[in-house]
Structures are given as C-alpha cells and as structure tokens.
Length: 309
Image (cartoon, rainbow, N blue to C red):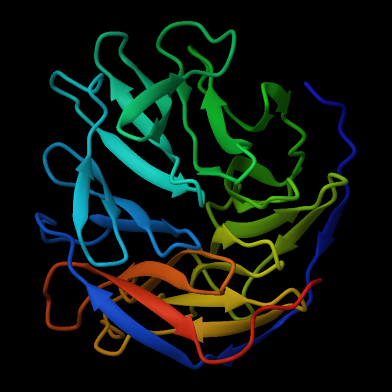
C-alpha cells in the first residue's frame, strides 16, 4: 500500500444553466423502473458503454452510428448473472465487472476485440469482490476491491501492475474512483457517515479536492467523468431531491444539464450525468416525464471546453 501523501481541500464553485445540443437514444430491452439504465462513459470516437438491469443485468456498447451490442462476460453464469460495462478508452478497451458464479464473487474484466480478461485484485481470498470503473489510454485503470469476510471497500489505481491505494478521505465510509485521465489523475465519489455522496478529484501528487455542486442536497453529488483538460461530469440532487446532470470546468463552474422532457417533478427522478470525452461531450441517462423507460442522452456543449488547466 502506498504511503499517504494526501491533503484535503474543498473546491469553490458556481452553477449555471448550460447550453447543450442534446440527442437521446433507446437501449433495447431496458425494463421500466427507476435506476434501471446506466450510461456510464463515452470515448473520443463517440462510443458509449453502460448497462441495463434486464434479467440478467447486461452491459452494452453503443457505436456512433447507433448500433448497440450486448456485452455479457462468458464466466457470468448460473442464478446470479451480471455484467456491468463502466468505462472504456480510445483504443476500444471496455472495463467493468461481472459476477463469477463458479467462485461466488464479483470480478473485474477488460474486454478488447471480442475477448474478456478477468482481473481480481492481487492476494484476495475467495468470495471477495473486485470492480474496474475506468481505464485511460495508457492502460491504467481504477476501481475498488472488498476482501472477504469484512468487505470494506478499498479504492485503487493499477498502473502497469503497480498498485496505488492512496485515497485517504477521513469523512468517507465508501470511496469509489470512477474516472482516470491520461496524466493518472482520478475523480470519483465517496459517501459520508450521513449517507450523502460527494465528488472528489485526486491530482498526480495525491492531493484530494472534495467537490460538491452548489445547492446540492441528499443524496448529494456524484462525479463520473474526467477528461484530459480537467473537465468533470456527473449528477446531483437539488434541495427538492430532483436530479440534474452537470459538466464542471477546471475553474469550478458547473454547467447544469437537463434533458428536455425529463421528469422534473418526481423526487429522485430527472437527468443523470455520466462520463465525458475530451471534446466535453457528456453521455448519461434520464427519466422521461411521460413514464416511459429510461433513455440515454448525448449532450454536446455549445461553448468551448478545450482549455488546459
């Protein structure tokens, strides 16, 4: 385990209603219900990954032409099948996790050119859990593991087999890295003792900055995307518990994302932000106000996002 070099800081910020060109899409087979669809990431080629909680839960890959392919790890079998696709890079490597029925545990995977490679955090006993949430263009990936029988989540970065678990956030009861840029900087979400979510950013020196959307309330702020220009994406819940997506600049300005036609009246429903690419394009999902199944969206910012921090 790496020595802790972490210092904590809170990011100052403001929020604006952002201007985005938004297109929406369906993921075939998505059942009805809240929290059923996850649109998790988009790369610079416009390829999108995510999952939907069919029976069993399956991952998917969506090409820029709209073609969607199911992603099911062949080792996920038996009564508790599950495959979740959570991240990808520009080389087309998809990462996520699946339930390994033969060993009764969750394992991470890397998927490239039709082949799955299983990843379990080194040294874990059977019945433990490993996830992979994101991968950068250099092949470094992030996630968390839970060692049986205690199952306490530990965040990690794997860089060519070198493991870094330096994610010290004293107020956290659960820390999940969700994004990593090509400089090795990491963003993610943690939960405090009151079960409120907060975003965080860890720079290449190990300094952690806690990030909350101004005016956000429980369940809080979730960061899912980070690009090489320092922009971040995710979602938050306002004081009335309505959900909104966002794109955050390196200077701390949040641009709110609300898909036209999203449910803005039911608590916890609305627009959920997902990942983003180096063009500032956000891919996420939303709850239609007409009660239809959750749909995906692509939000292209109508302002410049290409600026070094």
